[in-house]
Length: 94
Image 1 (cartoon, rainbow, N blue to C red):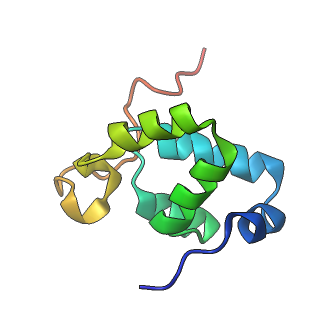
Image 2 (image 1 turned 180 degrees about the horizontal axis):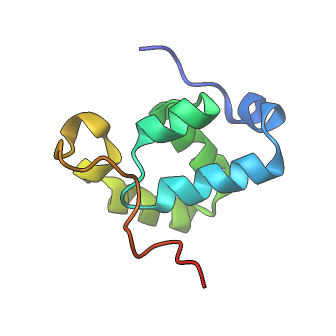
Image 3 (image 1 turned 60 degrees about the vertical axis):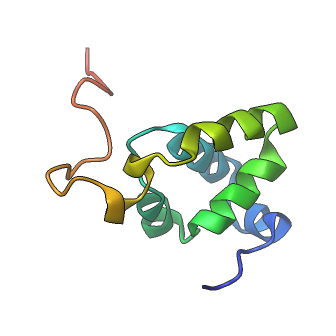
């Protein structure tokens, strides 16, 4: 497994908008880490390092506790019938 990018190198390579979107995707229950990697080239280890560097320690601990064992965050563990990253009720258009 490749070593994760250091948070400073990762934040230097990404725009503030990209960092914000990665954090948002990491918090979403149904967005797998593989989707983040496909879009931004950051593996799970790099996302964890980014989250650690961008969040308050208590928020990071809460996120890690929430993500621990969540099968929807890993495409290989997901039910094969789930082919989308978000709920149909999410991102409603008005």
